[in-house]
Amino acid sequence: MKAASLKRKGKSVRFCGKTLRVFEPERLEGVKWKQGHFAQDAVGDWWLSLPIEVPVDESVAPLEKVGIDLGLKEIAVTSDDARCEKSRFYRGIEQKIAQAQRRGHRRKAKFLHRRAANRRKDALHKFSRQLVDQYQKIVVGDVSSTQLVKTRMAKSVLDAGWGMLRGFLQYKSQQAGRTFQIVNERYTSCTCSNCDSITGPRGVNGLHVRRWTCAACGVSHDRGLTPGSWTPTRGVRCERIRYIRIRSDWQRPGSTCAANWD
Image (cartoon, rainbow, N blue to C red; front, side, top):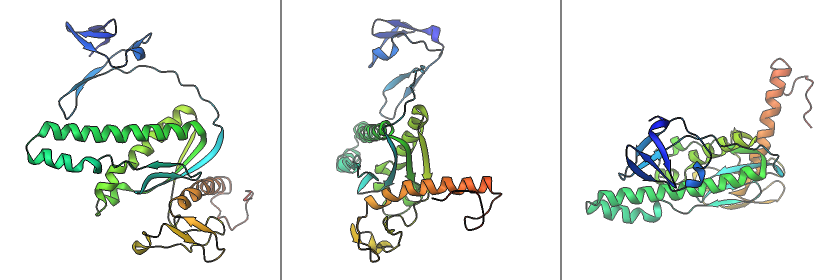
């Protein structure tokens, strides 16, 4: 669809002699679009999409860096103990969806699915915007949702929306001039952030242990907060290792090089 076929009319737009209502008309004030398209969702509603240019101002965040640990009890826990609580977007209305499907109410079931998706997207948008506005560098773990969906936790993993959150953080960081990095989070939940000892509960049997005490130094840890505390540290180490490999002809950290490890 070309821009000439779509014209403004007050707070609405006209296309082929029909008036289309716009939910947020203030976004179309003083802007121009070159093209657009109509899209139909699973419920059957039609939507008009118009790409417009929005100026973005890059600024310096008040805080330096933050690490994010993704989980199921809470969707995300940061190194500063900020939490994105899980609201059971799909799980909360799963029974209603099942009842609608058994009764043959396909449109109602699709409407409930859309409601869960919109609630999830809204919560992740707000949480990601809060982090981008506060921190200059954002580091998140590389937990793989594609591998966990093959287990018994598939519904909970998909309901959490880890991939969606990482995508929101990535594009919002690029627009705001932030640094976004994904690091390996292996052993972060069982590694002491005080003495670097791997003394925490490991394996499937240790998942139910939410708080543990380091056997080496005696510091108490929260299983949800510990990985978030370790994540930004691993992000810094990844940058230093990359610096050594580029500037020292792929020398190992233990060999002689001109990099500063302090």
